Length: 176
Image 1 (tube, helix red, strand yellow):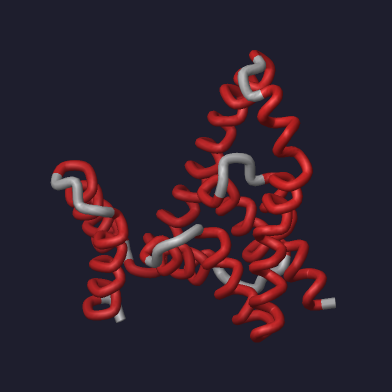
Image 2: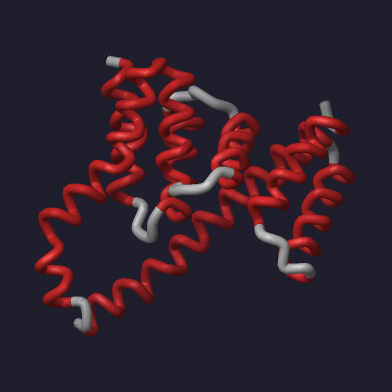
């Protein structure tokens, strides 16, 4: 039954996560943290940070790690397959249909409507991560890391992977 739960925890966000990995992260968080209780919000945010620091699709990296933590190697394989299965099925089954209607006004309107919903989901996840971080390391540390990260990425144009790696190092040295 555990492997069915692992499969569903990553398959459902894969189906509903219109917009790729970043759009499915709040859905994965809902399944992994709220529904099944496999990770806390803090643990999930650490997995997300680690996944962002590594190259490749974020959803599959998170699925592999969480699946392994919950169900070992078979859990990792199940979670990774579940996270890519919806895209795989859709790509194979609907490629011709999508190419035929890609310029349709209805498809373009759908995209316009869905984007704000994704933004709200990402905002809610950011809010949860901020207050979880605030509770665990304090307001000053949270604001310091957030402020420095903003300056490094927006003003100095440093790649987010380097900023995440730096924040991980800072956390390991100062916050542990």
